Length: 178
Image (cartoon, rainbow, N blue to C red):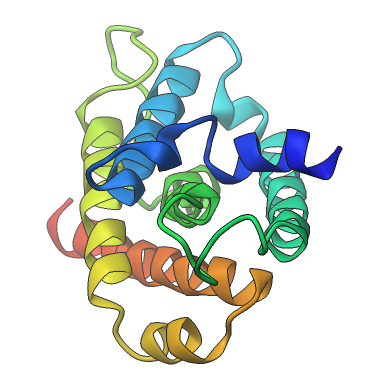
């Protein structure tokens, strides 16, 4: 039963089975989902608490599934598991929902009435680029977590740290240039 539900979640419904760069594909699709949900009537900005609760729920279940299904995969952090990229990528994407009021003024409302404008798209693009940068290069302490922790927490934690680094860098970029 766990295998039936766990494998699709861990592989992000098959994205982890992509032949080339499944982690990058998962991050890109996460950004695309975030953009589409931001443009939808669901409105991420009005439901940010639900977004966070959903991500926390996915995080905990993913850790359990990784530990329970470790025998299915040949490595402790196989490339097929991309739910960690989803969670890590969601950190900088979700952080815009919790920005201070005067930080990035009017970033998510266009005077014409369109829900999202260039500031929103730039945030998503910067999130993608910076997250992939930190996830691939693995600066300290990401590299330590990646090498030493060979369980569900370790698989998820290195991407969570990369997401936090990405968020910090994006806030610095916006503070300096926008």
